[in-house]
Length: 352
Image (cartoon, rainbow, N blue to C red):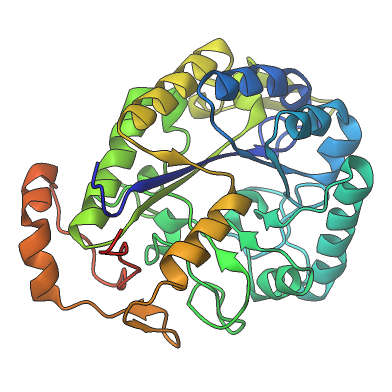
């Protein structure tokens, strides 16, 4: 663990219908919330649970349990609808028109507040399909954090930034903080869409140790470049309840690919505990997204360092960094160079 930069881990759950876009059932939310909370409590970890309006209505006891356990309730749209343009193909999913987005997000926010007594301040778009309209709407609604940026796909930012109203994927002047989802760029991708660099569903298709190792590789790469390290992880409640391999409906029989059902249930719960334990042993700090917003703004944005706030780029003499982090680079044994275009990001306070 690099004592200066540290590793911030955000474990989050998208509380949606089972197997994402493929069913209207909520067994995962109904049966998975309790076991997930037990694992988190066993490791003293706080998390963010992003609820759809539909899941709150279907399983009101779930957000009540989450709130009582001290975790954060976030928003994941009204019905798990697509609020932005697709980044991968899913048959039958048509995104909302841009003019529909503000009302849908406002209604989802209101519904979650009505049903739980908590007004959400953190948001994630289903499948990470966000847009300028989404971020502007969230900003107007008073959200503090969005976590829809799929780093494996967009491939540029690995650390938080305030997005532009003209292009939410780039830094700008909106108040909301964009927290990218973790991707491992230390491995060579063999897929055109780079999805094999995404952290999901590695917890199940491999195991908790593999995911923890991936996060630590990414952390070492960020430390070597003089940055703090962040890993925002997304999971789903249905992964922690055994899911079917086939879905029979009145019109079709759907056979799911293995990565959707493999090791769902108890194995996934065990591997979640393993991942958390190994990261905790490495010195990781765990946060909700709401709490991490305050950490990032107070520690990395408001510190009296040399920062260009127009571009949100931290100006660091490379020679100063290279001499200091050379041992970290050597210890990391990275198989490929860190990709260009990641930008300069906040360095830890050298006086801490």
